[in-house]
Each structure stands twice: as structure tokens, then as C-alpha cells.
Amino acid sequence: MNIIVCIKQVPDTTEIKIDPVKGTLIREGVPSIMNPDDKGALELALQLKDQFGAHVTVISMGPPQADVMLREAFAMGADRAILLSDRKFAGADTLATSYALSGLCRMLDYDLIIAGRQAIDGDTAQVGPELAEHLDLPQITYVASIERLDNGHLRVRKENEDSVQVLEVEGKCLLTVLASAVEPRYMSVSGIVEAYDKEVEVWSADKIDVDENLLGLKGSPTKVFQSFPKALKAPGEVHEVSDEEAVELIVNKLKEKHII
Amino acid sequence: MDFSYSKTEQLFLQMIRSFAENEVKPLAAEVDEQERFPLETVEKMGKLGIMGIPVPKQYGGAGGTVQMYIMAVEELSRVCATTGVVLSAHTSLCMAPIMEHGTEEQKMKYLPKLASGEWIGAFGLTEPNAGTDAAMQQTTAVDAGDHWVLNGSKIFITNASYAHVFIVMAMTDKSKGTKGISAFIVEKGMPGFSIGKKELKMGIRGSATCELIFENCIVPKENLLGAQGKGFSIAMKTLDGGRIGIASQALGIAQGALDETVKYTKERKQFGRAIAKFQNTQFQMADLKTKVEAARLLVRSAAWKKDNGLPYSPDAAMAKLFAAETAMEVTTKAVQFHGGYGYTREYPVERMMRDAKITEIYEGTSEVQRMVIAGHLFK
Image (cartoon, one colour):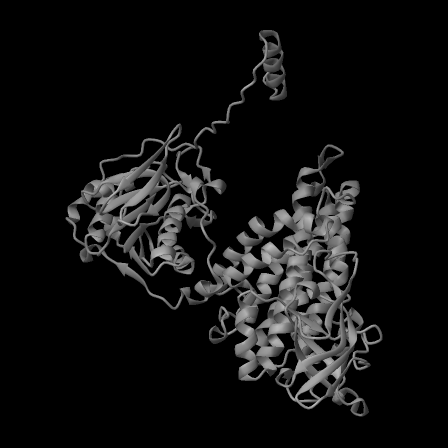
């Protein structure tokens, strides 16, 4: 079984700030990490490898600095790493990115593609589904776990916000994974020791099966209008009390938060 | 020497720091409070290769460096000094002498299981009457033809009740003094070998420190480690290496206490402002930070020498002396900065202060380190 895992290097948004004037991300001094949902995708691929002996190829598109993240993937257990890196990819939105990745995937022999649900620097959740469309593959999003059945089919648990679906899929497909449902493994020490002895293959645009006019800024219909941090949605509390108690409860809560 | 972390070390630091933060820190208070050996952590460390960092791959290790191993001890000790010393004693005091003095058969027999964490290692030198004066060994080993017979006892043995493999020093020829001491590999369960009482300690309370008892203990002939009569020299070399591990433990404790104090003094307000805003806090903390960095450089330099096959005995002694005294000073001041809260178990600094003290005592007291350093200075 050959598995491709799509991973992206992102700024650690728990430590990021937004430029209040320009509305863009301030990336200086912010550590870069493997996008959490993508790490979850890699973990599920490695679990299949542990159980059935799959060959796991991680692919990414980004600047040369993404090398360190691909080394991390090696140290976790990935077998091969390819970085698409070329100025021609610069300025790509999700459409141009998924198109470039599809060009790379077409050059590889694979049975399954696993991607993260979304990246924490953009939160679009578009690249995975678009990649499936470019490659004309069936897709399942919001995956929490994958089980391989005796007949070779995959049984996949899809966790929606308010429901869970268990789906069975046969043949090539693309899955996108939720980090919150998966506990990714640590890098192993021997994996770390060997990580820099392995080769991260750096591929330019002319090595993949694409129309160069659809890459980078040229192939990107999206224009960023404004960036802003997501407002945190606090989990609600349910209290079953009488009307009078409810009034008191609400008043106390508002006082606690210094709203009144 | 390059003072920065190599790319491999940076990757390793990322892993070990997140392991310490997520797997070790949440247990630290409980391990201390209940004097509980963190066996589940050791199992996790085994799976990841942390129990066999500097062991070559052909013996089942991770094939890493001493530098990576001491970084692991530092990062673990930063959140839990018990976990730090479990790794240090296992690696420096048990696996290292087998790697350095063992026969090929001994290496093949013991290293793979130790490096994978399936077995835990320990080291037995100290006796009731042979502490700093380690040459006064009273445990004896008699050649009985096809095996050795050991009699005597060892005390203060780290990991003892959880260990499977022990490096034990015993007198094989009393007339030769230190040249009559030999080293043995003793396995748990060998006839006549038992674990005695567990010490109740001030700090590193989860580390299972016990007595070893040998009553006509039968040890196979092939378990002599190194040549007969070389035991004292093996023990001293082993302790040289061990000191780098304990220096890292002390460094980790100091760094942990510094981290806690920075966080606390920024939050704690007195006289209308955060106590971190007072110049007294700033100046004292600047001094402590400087000492911690100096300790780190001494530790890294000693480890670098060991990795590169250079003599490192005085370097290890200086690293341990300075790091241990720094740990004691930083943790004592950390408690002071935390005030009354620091004296309670609500904050980890009182534990760190108790843990720090042992680093000035075991694997050679600070006085022994000064003897070693002066010995090299005036030779």
C-alpha cells in the first residue's frame, strides 16, 4: 500500500499576532511547526504502515525552510519526502496549491492520499477536497480514524460537529483528518539520528505534470481582503433551574465577567 | 566546538521537550508525593529510544551522542528530577560501563534489552562504610571454579527495585587494595541476590533507592566485567561519565526553577506592580540566568569531549560541581521569590529545592569534585 500524506509548515498560531494596520500575519520570530491536522494525517498513515507495512510518502509545497518539517516526518516514520519548491508556486491560493499538488501526485504511484482537514494559518479546509477533485478521487473529510478491512476496503470514522458517520470506501480515495481526534506519535530517537542522512527531494515546477499558467499567483483567483483572528467560541453551559434562579445565575455570570 | 545546537540536536530538543512537557510534567508532583517510580514513563521512553540514546545501533540503541543523552536528562529534570536520574543512572552507570568495558558477548546479551527499556539498569558501588572513600569495599567475590560467590551489601542504589541489571563492585583480592576490586554484571533473580530496604528521601523521591544484599550470591564466570582487579578503575571511569549526567540533571532542575520564577514574578503583584518589575528581582534573576547558562556550557563542553574521545574527567567534575551548586542556589532563591506560596506544595519550586540538594551529594559530593579538579590542577 502506497500512501501520500500532504503536510504544510505553518507558523505556530498560538504565538502569532496580526498587524493591526495591514491586517496581515506578523510571522517574524514565530516558530514554524507541522500543521496539526497534517500531523494527524501522518499519524493515521503511519498506523496503517505499522499494521500493514505501507510505504508513506510525505509531500509539501513551500519554501526551502520546510525542510525541517519533512525531517520531522522522517523521524516520525515517513519513508520518502518530496518538497515542491519553486518561485513559480509563489502566491498560490488554495486552488493553485491543490492544482500543483495534484500534478505531483500524478507522478507518484499511490493507493491512498491523506491530508489534514485544514491549516491553522488559513483555516480554509479547501486544499484537501480540491486535490481530490483535481485527481477525480472520492473523498471523505473530517476523518478521526481509519480501519483497513480484510477485503482491502477502508472503514473510516468521520466526525462532524454534531454527528458521526462510519463510511466504507473501496479503492483509491482522499481523506482529510482532524487533529483533535488523533494523538500523533513523537519522533523516535533513532528516527531523529537518521533524519538528516535521508534525502528530502526538492522538485521544481517543470518536474510535475501541470500547466504552468495555472500555478502561483497567476492561477489564483482568490484575493485576500482582510485577515483577523478567529473569535473564540466558548463552550456553552447547561443549567436546569427555575426562572428565578436562572436570572440570578445569569446576573452572577455577567458580574463575574465584569460585564455588569 | 560549535556552541549552537546542530540540526539533529534541534530536532531532538523539539521531541524531548514536548515529551517532558506532555508526559513527564503532569506526573511530577504525584511521583514526588507518593514516592512512586514512574514506570509508565520509562516504558514510553523505551519505545521512543530514549533509554538507549548513546548506544550504537548494532546493540539495539538509537545511535545518538552523549550530547543528545545529556540534553534528555536536562529536559526531563527540568520538569521532574526523578525521571532525570532514572535515565541518568540507567545510561551512565549501567549501559556505559558495559559499552566501554564489556566483551562482545556481554554487549550482545545486555545492551539490546537495556537500550529498548525492557530492562532497567543500576550500579552498586556505595556501601555503609565505603561512601566517598569508595576504596573501602567490603563486599567480596570469591572464585569458586565455574562461578563467583558474592557476599556483602550495597546501599543507596538508584533504580534498585525496578532494575534487571546491576554493575556491582566487589573485592576479589583484599591484599591488593583498590587493585583487588573487580566489577560484575549481576542480574535480578540470581541466586542469593535480593533487594533490601527502600530509603525514604528528601528529594528525587520516586527514584527507588534501595539496598542490595548478596548472600552467597552465585554469579556466572562470564559476568566479570573487564579484567579481574580493574573494578575500581572501571567504577571511577563510570562515575566520570555519570557526573555529566548528574550535572545535566542539576542544570535541568535549575532551568526548571528559573522558568517557574520568571512566570511567577511576572504574575505576582505586590505594592501595585508585578514583582518582576522590581530591580532587586531583575538583578538577582539576571545573576541566576547567567549561572545557568555557564553551567550549560560546562556540561555541553564535557559531553563534547566524551563524544570526541578526549579526556574529560576534570571537565565532568567542574560541570557537576558548578551545575549542582547553581541548582541549589537557583532553587533556594526560587522559593524565596515565590514567598509563602513557594514553601507550599501548590508550586513545584519547593520540590525542585529538595531535588537539587542530592546533586551536591551523589556520584561524588561537591567536595569530591573539588578533589578531582585539584588533583588534575596540581598533578
